[in-house]
Length: 427
Ligand SMILES: *[C@@H]1O[C@H](CO)[C@@H](O)[C@H](O)[C@H]1NC(C)=O
Image 1 (tube, helix red, strand yellow):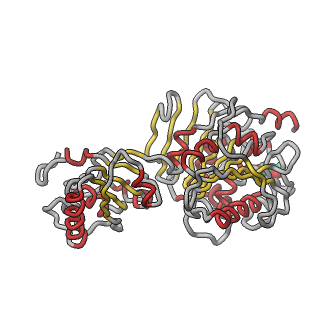
Image 2 (cartoon, rainbow, N blue to C red):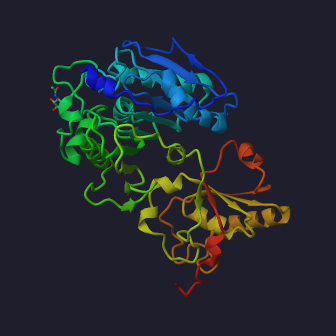
Image 3 (cartoon, rainbow, N blue to C red):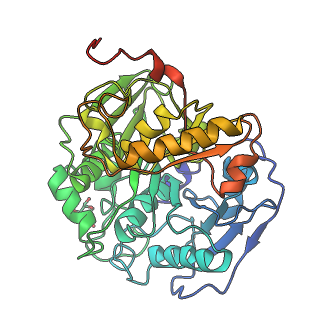
């Protein structure tokens, strides 16, 4: 056992990431019967209503090692979010993902303590409860899946690196911090329905929103068998009601050569890293995107105003929640088209005349969309809940506008829309 655990010692980062502020320990944050350590990183330029990232270390790791060894604190300096680094109370510093108390909402185990750290932080720092994220590696990834299953109401998204499905490390003797070699060896194989049942039973009766999940695993992992990648993806596919056997998309060489990304829907993505063992590196830029800290550029023609209908796969609530910036809005056609498709769209223009013109135009159009004008051609009864259209005056190259609104944009939209075919002349 000790040997297996020491194999789990992972060096995720060989340098200190250079965060500006210090890691602090908080000792009094609520019920903590299993004595989990609570370390927090609050950046100097803390955002108002900041997001929270819970970053959970691997076996033999510590809060400090994860603080120094991952990119999160450095990114917290840039984006103004808070990072919570829980620390395992056990010798060997794995997480309890085996006992009933940790596998149950409000059960008093490690998961309960971590949930209490989150609610404390929301309270203490006025953090944004709708932007709390969880990630971890190895044992921390097992715990990430357990957190997503036991406290789905707390998290908007999760990322699990080289872990196992929630409940896979279950101990039939209710052992705390137990090791389950059936699972680690990849022999706990079941159906999406069964795995989903296991996850759902960890917070029985809950039927609200759940965190979207991203699952990474190396296909040459000899510590936690690669089969656990498939079992974890089955679990979340089952929870979200996706057909595990029919993913929406399989992208080879994504996000890098030899890695394969499978997308089941907006709430589940799996990334299998070819030739990589258990020491899979945490992917900074990709994960910032998954948690919505960095902007995605929306430059395709999916929301072409002259297209009769938006594709089915864009109907998800995921798109609706996005905030889109349309720089240089002109008369605001594209802003309005996007808002009619459920985005909260903001047009940015340097001329005050353009802004006021766009405003009155958008008001008329969103109240009474006209198919032949530009709107959602042939579909004025949009199946989306319309978003809002607003116009701001500002300079695209000056980022003050995002601070003035109190949030950053999720997406920058550009002009490809104007290359769309004219009505009656579809491409
Ligand atoms: C190991 O976990 C599996 C589920 O993944 C469970 O069925 C089995 O009983 C567990 N083994 C032990 C010894 O607890």
